[in-house]
Length: 197
Image 1 (cartoon, rainbow, N blue to C red):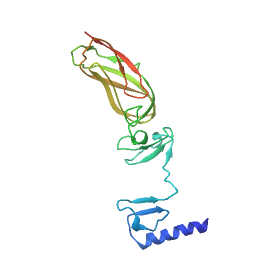
Image 2: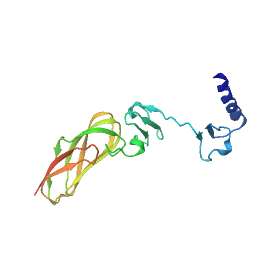
Image 3: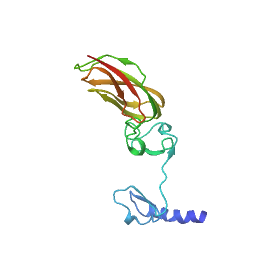
Image 4: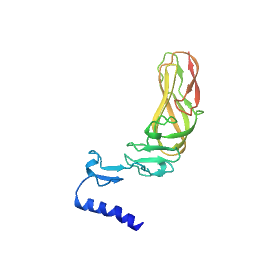
């Protein structure tokens, strides 16, 4: 093992002392700097090995994330990247469970209501609260649309577990009666609101 390690380290030591380059190549053919891609700082090359990214329980495990971090989230069985203010959804996309980078295992729509709606009158001061069971912190973008009215909310969940958000209505209802609003998430839930004639 010691002999093998020396065989690997000696050429690297020579390379780093003999030349001044801002690029590093690791792998099957590390000394062929001529074949390193010109725009890379670090290049990993192998025909039979892979890069193993840091595996963590969930994004909450990293207390001070920095833009550009990439991790493998064991709880979501996927890759996530920290994008300025929040973690991305699984595999760098918006997570269907939150519409943002957070992961939500379930939603409860039996929250509280404020305000009233009337046909032909632009809504104002109308809200509904919902509760998310957050399994991975991050951003959310949730909406429920029907009958000319959209209930929506965007933001960032500050922690995991039960988190309540307030959906604010906008638009103008076109038909009176009871309307059922379903969240634009998977999983989802729904709530009913009445539009007065």
